[in-house]
Length: 518
Ligand SMILES: Cc1cc2nc3c(=O)[nH]c(=O)nc-3n(C[C@H](O)[C@H](O)[C@H](O)COP(=O)(O)OP(=O)(O)OC[C@H]3O[C@@H](n4cnc5c(N)ncnc54)[C@H](O)[C@@H]3O)c2cc1C
Image (cartoon, rainbow, N blue to C red; front, side, top):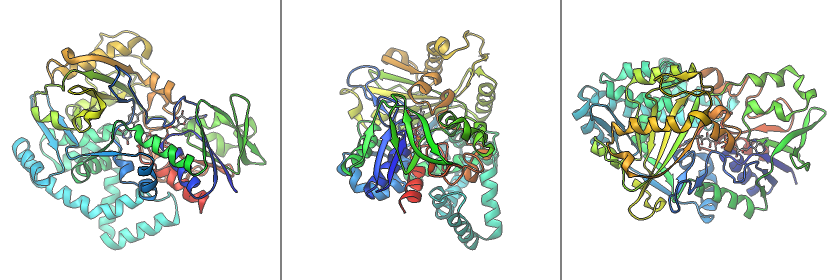
């Protein structure tokens, strides 16, 4: 029986392990952290009874993805429970306006007619466009790149939408969020509503490639809503671990892999910090590609096709603030209280400033905020009548050179973290007055803390590597390293540093399982 060692238990490592174990292969997962799941982890991080998703919370990608399709019954048998929200996201603005997007198309058109009447027809047209493009776009996300299957899929798309349609699609893939927003909307609020989704990934409004996510996520939220894990996102991790174990696989936490052992240019196993060697026919590294060189011998690193992976670039940083609350915030835009995500960016120019400042090492004065309100749809995450907030601060410096507002001093996240969190709470107060008085406890996780929890999150980059076009699609992570194969025989890569990129989808784990298990 083929022996597989998986290094790292992120969503992709676990997905690959579960799929391969179910096919009857011998699978061992080695995880350096004390818990499985990587960027998917739930803890009572503030007070007892308040269950916080420390990192990822939105599980929509997994719920609609290929691993779920293959393992649905197994995962449910092992305890997986999802909660669906029909009110996924809302953007709020300094003048008290808001645009909330629900799964009710007519209600959304009515909201736009009230707040941004000039954009009603464009929204309707984009809804139709997503329906037309979905059969071509979504399969690509589940297809190995580059591959013959991808070429076939492209040919099918060309047959369906013609040359001009295909070129329009390529244009969309290369467009920035701002260009997409300007082309489709006239009101600054609707433009911001779409462009904020680019910031979720790695796209300031003026970065080529942001349009796709602005389009897919803003209209996709309306079409698919949002999926959370019942009681916490770790329901998914526990279920995957359960599937691995019930199929005879082994999962070990607290075991750091320090070397991928090679012989004659082939991976033959791994060595762990405690000196053990695990032999393997195939090694799957659920490891940020930039960290692979540290796991290889100097002999391997001398090969130019291997050493070039050191040029894989991180995206900008992320910070998390978790609040235990006595009550939900009193949003000035009262509808915001019903939505899973509230976005405070607020406008496109602010996002552009934030992105540029962060890239230059400055703490942005009004950073882009994604505020998750999970207890709106899952009250089980807090004691009766109480609530939690999940505040993601996008995007932040990898190395701090100063403060754009000039009031915080310090050059390390340990020095500035709490003061910066105070700034965030103050900013939210402008949209939800009185928030501070509702805070029972708070936990701040700076970009540096993110990396301490999970080495893959280099500098607090939540997405395992920049997603700009030079590192995306068939170029992820690097020419010569694509197709989930390292240029070392029997060494496979999965995780957000590989195609199809960041997010709790499991897509790269599925692709690797298909490569090995066929
Ligand atoms: C704060 C935050 C919020 C996010 N929010 C969302 C969201 O709501 N929805 C969404 O879809 N995505 C979200 N993301 C992105 C998403 O969580 C990640 O892209 C995804 O979970 C990464 O999965 P992965 O398979 O790359 O593995 P990772 O999560 O990176 O896990 C890899 C694991 O490998 C382990 N490891 C690394 N090196 C070694 C080694 N040498 N030996 C042993 N173990 C090792 C690490 O400890 C880690 O546990 C968020 C990310 C962050 C950080």
